[in-house]
Length: 358
Image (cartoon, rainbow, N blue to C red; front, side, top):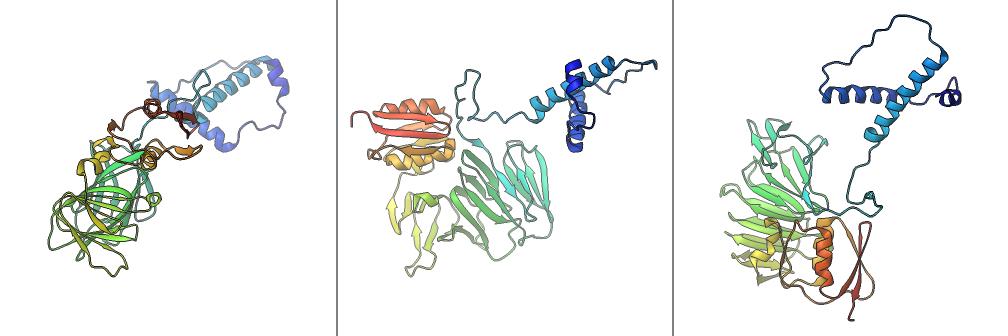
C-alpha cells in the first residue's frame, strides 16, 4: 500500500469526473441489486489517523472501483468471437430473434433487449411488444400515415411484426420493412429488402402493395406469400402460398403477371415451385433441396453472421435434405465435411478449401 501511495502524484487524476460518477452509480446500483436497501454508513469517532491509514483507505477504494470498472463497466460482450479460457474461439451461435425498430422521429429501439408492453407512441398509435416477443401496432384514433417506421434485422437475426392493419410479417436475417404507423389512404403500401413472408389481412377496398427494393411491385389480392430479394442474390423470387398476387417489374413494359398458389415469379418468368422449401426459413428449417452450393452458403453467411471464403474453385454440386436452423456451426461444418470439403473457421470467416477428393 505504501508503494501504491508513493506512486500517486499529488495532482494526478486517476478518473475523469464522468468516470467517477459512473463508478459511484454502478456501486450503488450493484448494492441495491444484491438486496441492500440502503448504502451503509460507517460512523467513526474523530481521531487523528496516520498517512498509512489514509493510504490503506485510498488503495482499497481504488481497488474496489477498478475491480468493478474493469469487470462490469469494461466487461466485453461475450459474443461468439471471444476467446474461451483455453484460448480457443467460443462457439458461433446460430441466429435468433434480433431486430431494431426505427421510429418516425429517428429514435431506435433494440427489440431483442426491450421489455414487454408499450414501447412507443406514434401519434395515436401504440407500438407494443407482446409476451411472445412479437411487435404489434395498435391504432387508437386518428391515422398517422405520414409517420414511417422501419424494422431491420441484422445478419443472424429474424423477427415477427403485426402491421397496423393486422397483417403479419416475418423478416428473415439481414432484411428490412418500412411501413406507415397507420394505413389511412386508398392503399396499404410497404417496402422491403432482403426476405419476408406475409400473411395479409383482407381488405378489398384498400389494396396491399409491396415495393421490393425499388425493383418490383407485388399487389396483393388477399393472400400469404414469400419474397426473397437479397441484393447479393441478383434476382427476386416471389412465391405465392395462398390467394393471389400480381407481380410487375417497375419500369418494365410487359404486363403484370398474376400468380397462382404454388407458383413463383423468378427472373421475369412464372415457374412451379416447392412452397415448403421456399418458406422453410420461416418455420425454422434450412431446406437444401435442389439448391446450389453457393446459394446455400449465402444462407449460412446471413444466419450465422459469417463471411464465406473459397480457396480454389467453388463447388458446383447441389445439396439435398433439411437441417434445423438452430444447429450449432460446428455440427454444420461436420455436415459439409461429409461432402469431401475441407472446412476451416478463422474468427467469423469460414474458409472452404474445396473437395478433398478433387
